[in-house]
Length: 336
Figure 1 (cartoon, rainbow, N blue to C red):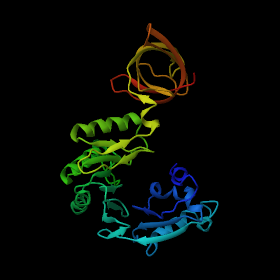
Figure 2: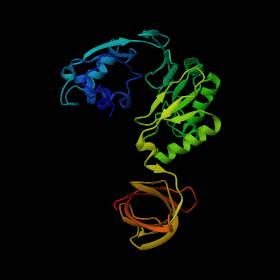
Figure 3: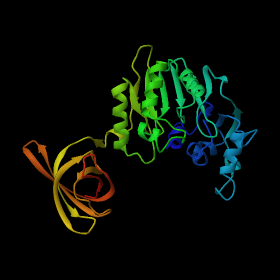
Figure 4: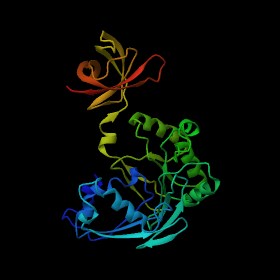
């Protein structure tokens, strides 16, 4: 967690910390009560956000205090010993944090949302968390915010198909809209952000591949990801966490699967194992196994002395529609 990684090795931080809060929806504020550095008295935090028409003056402070009020949390905000300052900003405002210039712009999202442009000596980063296309004025504001950015972090929660139908009006965007803005604004690198909670890693990977077909430098944000700005003309470097890269690899191993169908009948099937990891796999099956039932997976893998047989045992944790007609994508967690 960020709170655990944030503190310096000696437990102190000399520099003050500045946090830009885009808006007040739960998914953007609910981590605050659990952010350990806020309970250490030697820390000093500056928070920035807008005055909500629903809350009035000191909106951000009100939000933080209310979500920790009885009966929602064991302790109230007075338990936080760190020094805290709250500053109201609005779309169109520009201010400085040290030598860094920060610009705020309104985004198209229910109840209001700010996007931030941070210009540093190393480059420019734009953070546009929640925004939906469809408002010409706010679309122009987003493009102005992203103009010439080295890194453009943009909302990509929904697919273009969802955005045009069932998720229209929810206040979010898609990879396709992000690519269009990045291209028009001449941003160097696009980072897809705000993934839908229902999207699996494989779905996010598919969205990333689609975006990379239309734009050269695209990354998919993940927890622990570190992006490094280089010098002028240097390519942006993204360092992904081990949980995102080391444990899962796309694979297509021939395998024999044994288990029970949803109706309780034993089955055996030859198929392909995809996305093999140390913990599990995604398997395409014509049979529909029972959720939480045990599967035996037998695979032949290349070894120094030819093909070797690998036998694994796991249980079914997820069943989705397969990419091919008449198949199911079965998620398995290995137990041995």
